[in-house]
Image 1 (cartoon, helix red, strand yellow):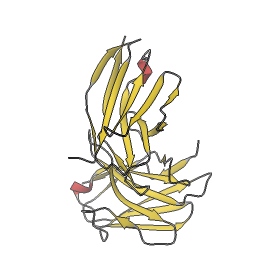
Image 2 (cartoon, each protein chain N blue to C red):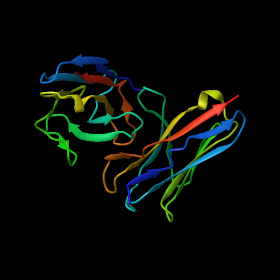
Image 3 (cartoon, rainbow over the protein chains, first blue to last red):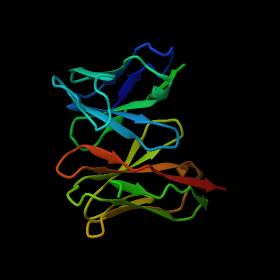
Length: 114
Length: 110
């Protein structure tokens, strides 16, 4: 199956700093990438939909100025958590698709904000 | 009503048992349905797509009931390795934007 990578896999940062997470599709060109957040024992919550070369579409309640998404190419999307706070600590997962049907998920990034 | 609802479980079954999960969705215009499997602290992995005619992959069978707006997943001859959380995914009506259920936890014991 298709491979999607995420970097870093884990990050610990101080409150107030910004954290950038990269999502790459390694063996296919992703027309769309999705960013999710998952809290322990909860479902994946879609944060935003990202299409190459255009602005991301954010879900209701997700602050676009806090969660900056850049989809620079068909194989790379980045999520920057700006001025992170402890409540932003979560498991962030991206997925990529080339067919609008099957999504391929990255391994996720665990963010801990102290 | 939530867009996608699942019984969180856990379903605790012995090896070899048959177990079934249901997932209900609220948007009658939804066209694409999937089951994903998520292991603890890992990313979801596609288990199978769900087609109108139903589909089967080995021990796994998925069915769609549009009239009642639910999809189901049947696992036969459960293995220890089937222990995981099973996520129901429904694309929003008229779009490819996915909505995840909260997942159903399955524990298969010896």
